[in-house]
Amino acid sequence: MVDVPTKPVLLTGAAGALGRVLARNLGAAGWKLVLTDIAPFPDPVPAGCRFVRADLNDGPTILRLAEGCGMILHFGGISTEHPFETVLGPNIRGLFHIYEAARREKARVLFASSNHAIGFHERSEPLDADCQLLPDSFYGLSKAYGELMGRMYWFKHGVENVNVRIGSSFPEPVDARMLSTWLSYDDLTRLCVRATLAERTESCVVWGASANARTYWRADSRAALGWLPQDSADGFAGQLAGKVSGDPVAERYQGGGYTAMDYTRAAPPPGPLFK
Ligand code: NAI
Ligand code: 15L
Image (cartoon, rainbow, N blue to C red; front, side, top):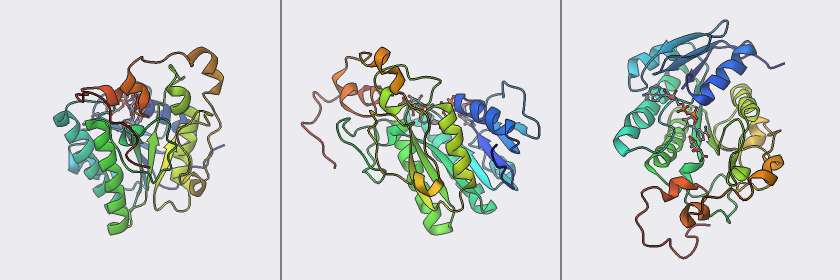
């Protein structure tokens, strides 16, 4: 049994992989969701919820959609590496529209950040959430900027925000890297519930990963939310431990394949730059 927030919750990216999971799970728990995406919503809209098709670039529409909402679960935008101009509108301007809406509604934001905001940290280097931002792509750069935008709106306007640096959220882990980075859909759902219902979050960062023994990640703000992952990729180790890319750059860094995309250095630098 999950508590229901007193005010409606805006869920962006509702037609995407994670948005559909959250719409289904939170809708089934009786949450009043305002679902939105630039793409049509492919599932039946849960009872008590509504879906509005909208572009994150359209500021006035985002303001209107957020009216009366106490929480924005922001999962919309470009979710993999693309050229800078493709990422810019949805991920930067779109996030600005989300924060302006949150500021006006005095709402809290959960920002679906990504491990690619810190992807150029070495896999051998366990990280706390206050580590150096080290984006590995234009996409990761937009997530790093998004986390900083959250900090600015907290310090300047008191807009609370939970920045979830999601590892790899899929039905199951599919390669050796995901033995470290996998986040189950149920752990993701519980994290969204806690981020919404927690008394106070300020502006914080949480690693979005299940309880994986091979994790790269340590301290974060999960205790303040009252969230603890319950699932783990460990049971997949037998079948996945040898499933590696063979690319020395991708295998060296936490961001995996994104670090190796469009990589033009002759060789990686000799050792970790940031601790
Ligand atoms: P997805 O690509 O399936 O969903 C993103 C949704 O955003 C899509 O439905 C798309 O139509 C929508 N969108 C794109 N541009 C838009 C625009 N201009 N206006 C309105 N909507 C727009 O991605 P997924 O996997 O569901 O990820 C959701 C969020 O979580 C993304 O922000 C992604 O960066 C983040 N994330 C996901 C991870 C994962 O493992 N699935 C890992 C790390 C972060
Ligand atoms: C992400 O940020 C992407 O949204 C997702 O599609 C995966 O590539 C994930 O990171 C990952 O690093 O596995």
